[in-house]
Length: 530
Image (cartoon, helix red, strand yellow):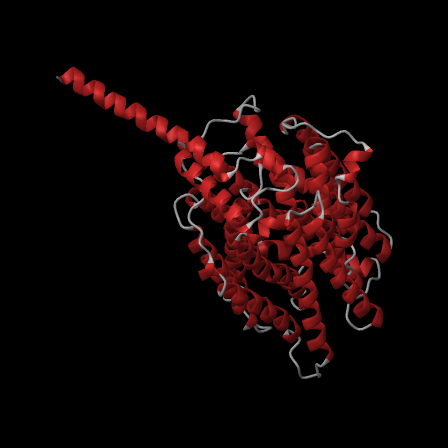
């Protein structure tokens, strides 16, 4: 009896271990070792963080760049806005390129081009030179994000705890990249000058370009030859309409005209995508209520995030007269907060309702911006800025993780780069939109100031805008119907059924762009499950 009992206990233990392993998932077969897998995730994280690294690097030295190159305030703003705009305008294009002609080669080109553009930008001699190369830097940042997201989504195709943790690390690229760029820039500019910040970042990405060749797996799908037929599937007209928007200041007549033209081009783009045979952006994904709500909530919060990070840095430079290194030290808690939040997300996405997590993120955003809105010039750092920068990272990282995971589950494996392109296009364009609105608010307040008006008043206007946008996002959270994401294979399979069911209940019943051939229908999924 004792022997039989021991055998039963042993069998139960083995089953428990197998169940745990099944939920965690095995290392993908495309990697020869765990080291290669970890370096791949790190490389993908550096790819998604390219734009953030650049913005973090310039945020502490914008005043120095402006002084050295004799730039006016509008030209200084375009260092940041130019890279975000060019990145957002071309993300969908590069998503289509990656899924059509191959991800790995575009990944390598994007990493190498970003490094080279940074190197050349470090030799800037005037405002036009700097602003143009900021746009080129954004272009290469756009080129690398879709293949990075697509490769990650293809490697970790099935829902699992391993996928949750890989995507949590990947999602850390944006917030940690921003602060990492500030640290590198702060040290380099303190020891040398602002140009050294660009060159230091160029060296780092040159090393990761080499690493990309080894760590990124070969494309696991049949690449389309570069033929005339392939370019017919590319939807060049849709790209032209998408890239037509050109935001600027509001005081001159041509700006309003371009804004109106840009609006109609955006409408034309959406209409064309609804009738195009091979669209850049499959519109049926927006018919999923959770998808649309998550994107709206993310946009409203991230608009404020971009405005806050830019103007808190400018406040520390212009009003507090701090050096780049001193600014870096004061914003360093964002790194620690970002690491902790992303680790926590990797552990709880499959345990806690993602609706609750999204609500926590929106509340953290709103609280952070409200704290800064009541700040005064003599304010103590620990009372206002410290809690605000910690909370804003909590909001950004939670919402980035939840939204990114859901978006990547909304398109089939052969369209993962397009999925990444959709998400990152929205994030980059809302980043630019948020900064543009905040700049307009700040300029409007500054133009009406009298000598007795506190110098901090225009900055508070930007923070109030951020608080209003984040507060609005709270009203959309109750309408979400999200549960958990990831977990063991059985739950993941059920989630896949629900996601496909949502697509077919709200969509056309067939996935455009040949996806119906590669992705099982609801009936097929259920049949396989049985």
